[in-house]
Image (cartoon, rainbow, N blue to C red):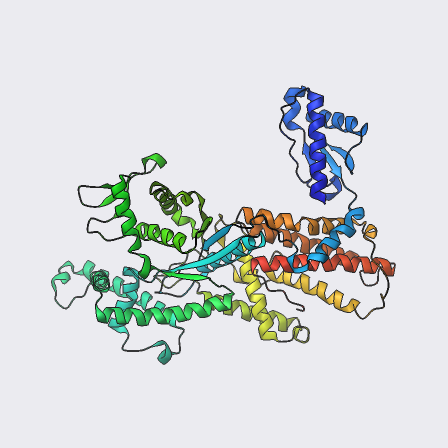
Length: 595
């Protein structure tokens, strides 16, 4: 509705500008949102026309306003605001249509079919099987899950995939440490989650590695001592045995992989993360070799004097890149080439989005270019959703040193903080199952805090800030929605029978802002999906929650001046609840009826 009006004004103002300037080829005037609601509902800048008109933008705005006032023009009031020609719409007159649209579509409000018929694959998470998930993975998982939901909301068919990094020397390090120091213990015997158990041995390898380095530094000749074991050398030997299919090494690998994967599955369930298909590096790492050999035959790659196969990246301003080592072994790049081709064979996608940290910007730039050299047209539809690092208030996390924030521990800590908040505020009677409610608050806090920052920016995660029930947090949004639900429940006990709502009564500034927010929600979802940016939804929800809180503080809803006004305001906040619930579903924030 409002968009249609904005477009009508855009056309009318553009035509008037062309006549005013005597130029038929000027582009359409742009449209924006005034910084304050009282300044109108659409803003048309006159800056671009000052040179042609040889007048100040403010004068152009006044002139165009005067010319349009003499003609039949679209619905709305024109206002000159400095260099802008603003339009104010009669929002109350549109209220019933806005609210009816939200009511009719319900859980589907905000969804459209812009991407109907498009198949989009989203790769995210991609954990190693030598350690549990940590806070960095959680940002990746939240982004991947949310972007997938946003794309589904715009009509796309989405396949969520996960590449399990279950081979390589880093995996052998935890295996070797377990073989050296494990003494036969198991996750069952120690009572640990499998991924935590294996991760402990990855940290133990790093300690052993440091101990060996200290010994070599103190006595360089120790490397000649038969009793001295060099951890890195032994890890490389184990990798070679694994690649050769050594029975004992493979058996240990399968056992420790199983322990880790069972633990990861539990973490994913607790975080509400799911996948449609899993790929395993152990099954894909050789696939790229044939692609590289094909490129060699095509002449797009070159075999160097040392026997390695490389690609010249000069056309994209980079140096050469090795695709196969001189001994014929593969690299991550080789693996990703084969995996991409296999995925397109499995499910011919129209687009593939890789959700991977910004540290891999170079990798994906090269990957997409190389796939294009190999002749795959769909390489043009590969996208890297590059996101910034997650740090702690006291610095960067390091897996090898065991200083990461473990995903399970963080979720447990947030749940404990949420439970304490419920108990301290004496809300136990209002929320039913306190433990279950605390888990949902914790998950909402986590996902919102990770998503409200634009993906490309680095961020600092502060658990106590994330769980706050006030400010720009998930629990604040959950509490706002629960408060709306409480008001609506109370309304059912009151005598409003037979009284109809009238949108024209919604004349307060906050009511107009909420109506515009409700009407703009579908466009907000489209914008977030188009940019792969859930922070757009977060910002929308926070602003809507703040407006409601201000509105609720200053105005009566159940006991308004007339019953007709109460019913109308109830209709307004019910539509707002629909929008917030639907927005929550897109960013992984559980909706709570009470809190």
